Length: 240
Image (cartoon, rainbow, N blue to C red; front, top):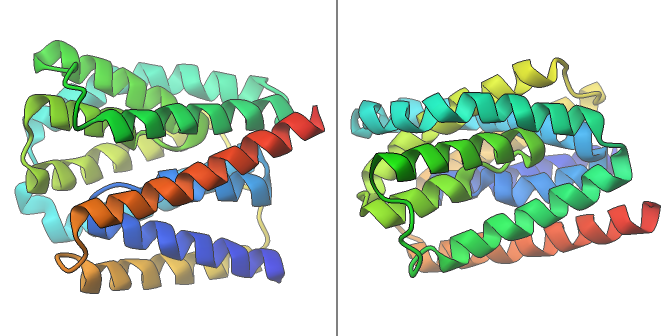
């Protein structure tokens, strides 16, 4: 029961962050769900919840979706999802936990540096962002930083980026689940609290959206994700 409550709380915080900032669900939830469920099942739960969160949010912001940019990102991302899924299935638990934690830390560095890093421009930049997002989505459940870096590099308007990102994350999350060929091993109580946390987080995010300064929301997401990623790496190293 304690684990189920922990799952619900983590998903609640992640869903709130996703609604307020446009991304953040996977960055916040992935390291903690890996700690609670293990690297493979934890990321599968992240992928499952990310699909649901993205498509629920998409129903509220679909008018701002940019179909052309979505296609530019999703097209090259799908082969990378297959490669990432192969790695996730192949590596044993402890090394995979270390890889998950380190990749999330790298993704966080990209988010922190995004205001100064404008390296992914034009169509080549979109392709590179798609590949990075697809691979990270399948391995660690966190494909957002690569897309965010492309958004900053190309001067993508925040409201258009936040809406289009939901379509991208929804499609890539679904592709990751299919490529890994399984469903998470989790008790019914866990699924119940996860569903409750997801719904409550989206409702809370709706209330907070527009009230929380973007910089403050992003700082909170980064701090939570950084702590979880470090704990994941430490746990993986200790189990080697």
